[in-house]
Amino acid sequence: MSTENSHPLVQLLAGQIQTKEQAPSEAIRSLEETLRLIGAGNISHIDLNNIADIVDVSAVVQGEQQAVPQPVTVDNPDEQFHVFARTNAVRSTQLAGGLNQFLAGTISNTIGPFIINDRPPFWIDFIRIQRSVALFVQGNPAPIMYFKINVNIFGGLIFTIPKQNTYQIIPTSVWVQAKLLHAFAPADLYAGLKVSSGTLKLSGNFTTNQTGIILGPGSNFSCQLNLVQKARPANAPAGQYGKDARDATIQLPVEFSFTNNGIVKVGGVSSTVFGNSLSAPENTQPNTKYFAQQKRLGISLNVNEDPIFNIDETQSPLVDINGQANITSMWWALPLAQIQLMQPLEAEGNGALLVECADGLFANIKGTTKDEISLIKPQFLIEPGRINMTDISSNGAGKSHSFSLWQEADKFVTEATVNFLKEAPIVFNTLSQGDEVLSTVTGFTIDADRPVNIRGEAVALRTEK
Image (cartoon, rainbow, N blue to C red; front, side):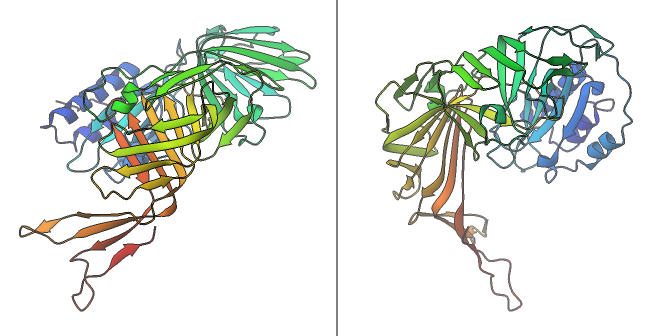
């Protein structure tokens, strides 16, 4: 496949990927076709930091930095894209090689996996930048909300937004400043929602300009949104990997209303996960909570069923979860992202269901010893096509696992022993498309024949964390 006249990113990857392998060749063709359809002039930024140790990306990065910005006149200014490379199969800000905080809760067109020699696979995401109207409070430079309405655009410029007391929000993304919904959330984070329609009503003194609406002292607003749920991934493979996520069901809130004084209403939810049926009615007096580890905003729900979470076993070939625990609380959890001023990205859906449990559940890595990891305060995040289990203080003390690394002369010469810890974070993701990822903090010892000291003796390699 000739890439002589292709985008520099295609030329870079095509020159290093073993094109004799069918999958990488298909990935390169998909990447080239995507870049051709989008157009080089519509790529606003390329972030390749996650793969800088896999390929030499300096040429692409340098070319992007040296590119002279050209005035572009477009009929649809929404056709601008952010390009991002990641080395984790899970699009999550929790995991190394996953998303950065600017991309949380966004929807992407993903190309990959790309495989270079025997290095870890990586994926490239294309995320659309959404031209939006901003809602400001006078004296505060950060918008409290981004949304989209029908306005006249000429030559890529929006003339002054018409001043009216009611605005109809069109099907697109809405980003709401988390601090508006929870007083102690970081001011630079926004909750992203995909909407089918909505209404913003204003009263009191306000003005408009080319970029947005500015609320004056004493003015008020109310916003009612009809939400769109994230679609389940299509063409899910057969097999056990990801089967727990494929078998789970989730229906998240379809209505959400709030004002400058707080949340008015959040719609009901229903879900089945690990054999448990959970549901909650709409809530008109919810509490809120900021989950720092997941970078999510929780809006409280009142569970209809007995607050018990019972898991006989999981179908995952990687991790088994079992036991019974009380449900301490249940939340509608919205992903939070940082936003480059006036350039919000396209949101993916309407959040997730987050179930907080007390102790009583246990986890184990299949194929290891029977010693289990005690889950102290596990949280289960359920969204279409994904289950995430997080416990920031799990207890795996007493559990260890050894495995062989490389060998020479038909004999393994290196062995690693992993020791699980007390009060250690553990994160497990299972995705319906067949990806499963476990992440935790451990101690380890490596018995190796190298490196050696000046006397030719192997140097001990170990760490407590």
